[in-house]
Image (cartoon, rainbow, N blue to C red; front, side, top):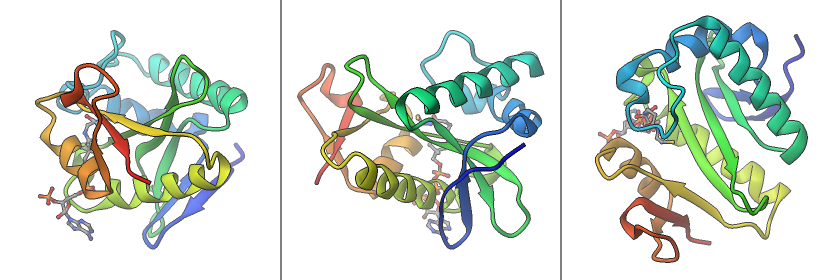
Length: 168
Ligand SMILES: CC(C)(COP(=O)(O)OP(=O)(O)OC[C@H]1O[C@@H](n2cnc3c(N)ncnc32)[C@H](O)[C@@H]1OP(=O)(O)O)[C@@H](O)C(=O)NCCC(=O)NCCS
């Protein structure tokens, strides 16, 4: 399948997901520890078919909005290690940063590197849009990640402890 590249960093390639990612996606979203703070009734996945459907939904989201949860690949060996990208809120405009990585690749700075790259990508594509992040109050890794890359709490949204906005 075609691998449309979105951007590259020192260690990573961010690209559109493809159906060839299905096993790696399943590995991420079937892990209860990885998905425990992700706000979705469909997780953890129990079948590979669910991973396949979610990739198809992601590609449809990209077609409609120009963003999705991009696949994150290691440059050194092309392993697909996570997803990083954006949800679009109901207003059809505002962006919510998302990062979901295979647990084997946590703590190495890959999520930070990927998030910074996708933010640069959307800033050039949609310069006027606000970028938010939503973190569960117990998801300390996610909170550290968003703070590290410049997000600050916002009281525009309720409850304020969960919502961050990227400071321009
Ligand atoms: C949220 C999530 C992506 C954060 O992952 P992470 O591994 O903490 O983030 P990074 O890959 O950027 O790694 C950062 C850590 O690696 C360390 N690190 C090691 N080598 C590094 C390098 N070369 N460059 C930068 N940081 C490096 C950093 O010091 C940092 O550690 P610290 O938090 O103890 O200071 C991950 O926990 C995850 O996938 N969780 C499940 C899904 C989820 O809940 N997502 C959030 C809601 S969208």
